[in-house]
Image (tube, rainbow, N blue to C red; front, side, top):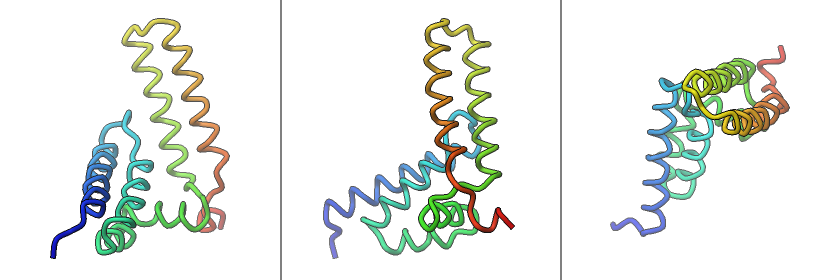
Length: 127
């Protein structure tokens, strides 16, 4: 059976997003969680099998379920994100980025940090 072009689009988008998320595990400047969440969204529209696999994955599934069920981000993920945000700024600063670019980066990174740290922690984190 042929896959419809819309389903194929969602599957390809989900795979690309998942690959970027996995790369983000190793590169501090590339976020992991947003890409994995996007991948789950894409798979939910393109492939129930891939969506179920992703949710059942021992490493990638729990953050997706925490976000889906509680809109929550674990404390560990929040602090890892904070470290990545600080690292991104330090790299730009040490790389000699212009003052204006650094100021813009601070504003964006601060906005991201506020969003992340105002999300609730999952119930399991609160025990």
